[in-house]
Length: 372
Image (cartoon, rainbow, N blue to C red; front, side):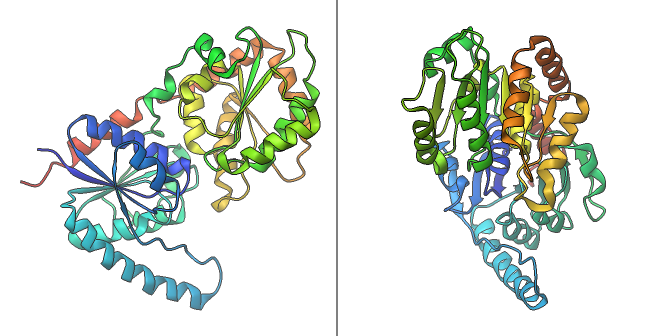
């Protein structure tokens, strides 16, 4: 008998894309999957595009300072959970699969009021506040990094599974990608991604690389730069101000819905260190240079990145006091040394877990039979 499962959470690609990977695996097995999230955030756009029924729920951000503000938040959260309880009941939900982000909490807590079980997935090395809160009422917690196992509060069972990856990301062809981006498949290629929201620091390093590598020799690297919609116009203007006409060795995209092609042509990836991106890099065995975002809870991206660095899969630069020219030089040296790139790629591959979504679907079906 199939479940009616609510995917709950979102806000960023690090929450939304693993959620959809798990949702796709569960839908393929005949379960009904509905996305509960915030309509104005990424999930409100992407989930319906992927064919999911989407339900907007009340989202409450936790105040970081002020006792009165925190007390008020507690009352508002209880009210939001009670309201969301009615939505959970109306959908006939038999399970909630929470993926983090503050919008998750009312759904998980509302489901708990009805006795509906919940599974929570923590994508980062340092668990987020919503997951730490909801773990106290969850039935099972799944984590991506081993260090998260001891950071989940309460006595809930927790399992190390990794971060789900969309199988489509794992499929791509270098020659096809070269045609898609009008790039040379024989040249070393740097893929630059700033995550679903873009990243100003990454974009500045990218511009520096384009300036430094504007030679025409066949050994000069070429660049595929996915800016994020927020920064696309700004980045194009920056390139054009520095370079004039965009050279044939640079391709700039605002968004890419076929990341498998982007990864296929990449010899090295420059990125933030969101868990979703890192899981894709490891599943594909791609070497990387990582600049963790400092604008995240508990600096969790740096914790994510250091795990890859310790394994030899990545080089990490912190944003504070960043020397953009130094990053550009380091990337050029890596791209000139295929043996080093191969070792880094093999190290990344050793950390990869490409079948996490199917594993989660197995756990859901084995641990949570549908009530008769």
